[in-house]
Length: 462
Image (cartoon, rainbow, N blue to C red; front, top):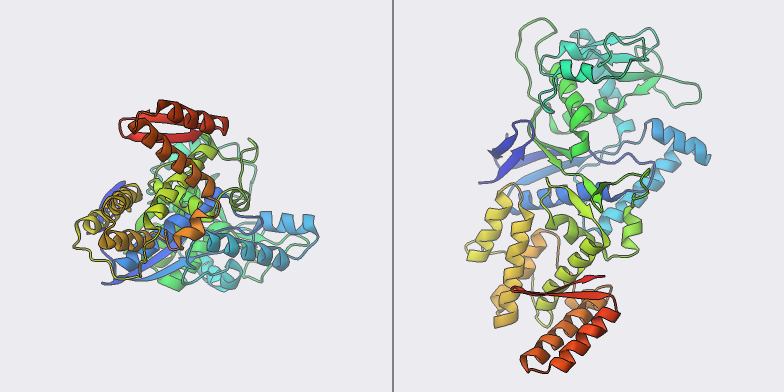
């Protein structure tokens, strides 16, 4: 049985779909005003992995990942570039698609753009006003009245009192409460706008996902995912909007509530050399920058090697380690002809893999199964183990190239290091210590540091 860590419940829970055999999943996607960065890469790869495993488990999945194609940053960037918003957003949507394809990310079933769903947002805002959960302000904006939604803070674990205590002095005097957030922004000169009952304007960011998810997946769906940074306030505000709009209760009256999502999933932050990635620290990396130096499958492997909820620490050393590890797996497949086939889940290693993935998508443990299979292939040349290695890795979107295509590409230097390490071990076994020391020096001169451990010899870049 699949268990998922539900952020809302703060525990792992057995996954039970709303409709037997089907899964509805919505993931917050990118705001397209710039190239995607490593944080975006992690969201793409993580929920691609989740979708792949759900499908491998026999579920019919409807995976929706939205595109935010209108907001303050987009408008500002388009003006700076002296181009239209449509030109800017399409350029970066194309770039996002190129990056995600290189990372082995399958296209979601539906990729809605915010600008295509404005009418649904207007309908939802009107419902929130009618029920007493939102109000038009004198400046033409429409705000959500946070204090009127009883469950506000249940996802993030924050109370309104704590939030207010940490709130800065409120500048916007049109709000009734500093915690209220905008649903509709009144039009400013030169900005794109849509007609509404409250005057020309454009939607706030939070309302986009509530409207798109409900229109495409229904008012109640299985899984909502995104980065940990979206848990508050974005996902908290989504819950407040959706459950207030779709429930029978009006503010101050009893009535049936409508639960928006059964399972909330959040992937961990990406850090760079143990510091939070940010432009101000100068450690901000786009996917394109990283792919100039590393093979895209190495980056995918690096992301999946960590559990999706844990912090992911990016560094050249960690990418080099991932490159070496992936090289070991491809080396095991080298010289074997393996056809794609159905996985026999009764096989002990396949069962281990399945148990790991069903335990909140525990990819580190699933990866351990791949390395055990690679060791078995190296020792026994077993065709069964070889096939299982390739096909289980395929569930994670890995090891689907011809081994030589990978090994002769960017991983060739890692393969050379591996060969020299093996030559050194052979020399030591034959008590030819002069040759063994010479190989160590050769590697050291090339910037490779060897570390002999009881489990074998590992290496890293100096």
